[in-house]
Length: 591
Image (cartoon, rainbow, N blue to C red; front, side, top):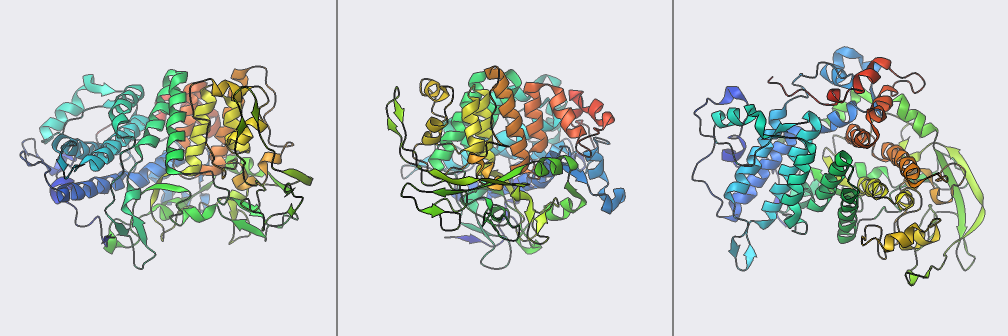
């Protein structure tokens, strides 16, 4: 296996440096590419791909901050004072939004133009020895272009749209100034759903390993640096459905997420949780399998990264661990965590043998023993119940995903980023399962979506906890987004921090609602809360609130962000500002 010691330093300069959107770097007659350059050798495409990733690095960390600082889970840490926070404190307050510290839309267009150039010059159909030479990279570049446009639409609303490379600064100015070629979120999603569809099952490129620092442990597979097309398609369907309200888009989003999870064998894994080791629930005795993936590859959870180095000699150094020192978890997040409940239940197996945690087969502490195969027919489903309950649930306050070993207590400092593990995560299993739940819910199946949160999505659980015939309705739907086959590892996402959530009927259950729309709204509220508990600080929060608000109205976003500093006394000025959807976007101004 090849190893690149400094993978982003010797990239193809003709590609990376040439496509600049900064006016002072070129004049209106400068040709930005070699007109006759085409990709004819595999080496051409390797270095051009690395060049594109280096441009993605320029926006990746900023994107995390844009997604979190405007949401409801983060607040400026007053200990550092306004002078140290500067523009980032302004962003959190939705003020001075022209500031170039975070508002540089041309950096995204640099990614777009590099991708356009590659896709215009590389021949996806070229074959050698029966293999399509550029197909993997063609798919990867197409995904990065779609991702860049999606970020632009989420940040700026309606944006200039073009798919051919711009070869001079005058070309750039003409396109960027032409308001007739602009597209909004719905149009961008529709375009790239069609554009990406042919590449869903194309294997991602792999150039060996990337050393991002000194030592054998500082290694990341280059294959993890590319965006899975199936997951990106799921996102595009989810966003489009949220704008249009088309139920079929939600079903397609769910199908894409589920198909990827099945194809790549990702589970809501029972070992990615934080649990008490004993029924006494002594905080000193917990086992943490959840936070480990924030500082390691952990292939059971992590799906993709935008890579950074931890030393300058190895490339662009990651800085999120420094940036987030100015912020901490909000009071709204603290309120949500402190009003969560950890549930502990000791199980026995069919043989009567007792398990209270550490020695339990497969389940460890969550108590979910191996799922059995589905039996029966569509009209007469049967399932072999695999557990009986010994004792009654015991409860404690709080969600252990926010437990900090150094302090020995629930902590709201932002500890998901480390200088020793500097990468930006693009996808991980927990996030995808929550989006799957969101899509299933809006497709019209709230009880099944709730299974993702509480029980774990499996055939057995769908049958066992089917209270209203939803499982039979799913089997007749023509979709398979609910069917995880013989996946026996899924637990409810809530169980990752709250123990035996599947047995918690006192604090975590889905009440009977008057109608299916009411159930959908209730489950959506629970999904929104679970996204906060599971993915806080990971760059998704403002966009999650935005997506829900497209379906629920502006108050959904405005009321939550306004509560972040004081859940009992919302910031009325901030609320009024965010009730106007225009204020969700950055101004696209020259700066």
